[in-house]
Image 1 (cartoon, helix red, strand yellow):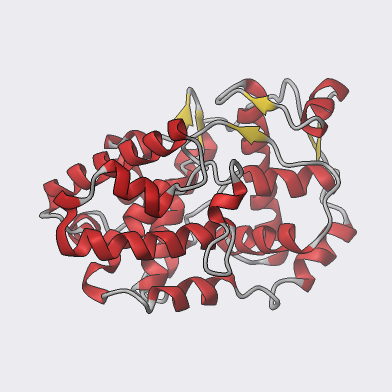
Image 2: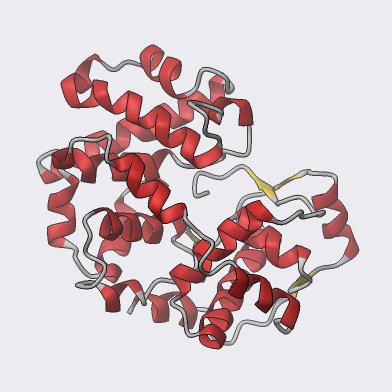
Length: 296
């Protein structure tokens, strides 16, 4: 089971920097309030209607492969009346028209023009490198991500066998987060309307620990930290990837997500969706952690 795989590796972990506080009524009420107000899944699925269904698996895989560091150069993701992830999604829909017709004609200049016109050259090159490595990897599955799913239908195999790609090695020492891996599995199941058939597999997902989830927990006092780390967040300084602070904050978020799941009797992946939605709807005074990572 994937959830056991992630949690048991640090089953007896003693936090060195952070403290996890008890989930208070104010926060619980916020989550309850937003259970039915969240429409991000519907918005995501509606945008997928613009795509050829035969290539939907490839699109989802490549979209998730390119989804990282969207907090930098935010103007780049303001596109077609969208921003952030949905801005990236709109850019990917445009890019995919070229990928579907002839991927060999897609060079870096074309890629940058469509995906990264307003972000740094360094970041654009990194995104292109990951895009190309993902396309090359697909050749193992006859250039069709659906074939990968057919070989890896259960969530554990699906997530772990993606470790072949650097983009999906979201772990460090005993800390396993697998944010892009798990989110890709969920998105694939949703897009293919397999929710009921794979209900048990979906319930084996944790929350998808990234900067937005950490931010909302910190702002509501559920994750406490020494003043020097809080000051670093407030000054919006970059945090080193896989440092102890980042690892503990992401692991603390997963544990809090599990606690919320038990209290509300809602699967963890749905808790994540509510948290992500809520983080965009409430005013958060403490900025989100900034990390130069390819995992979120």
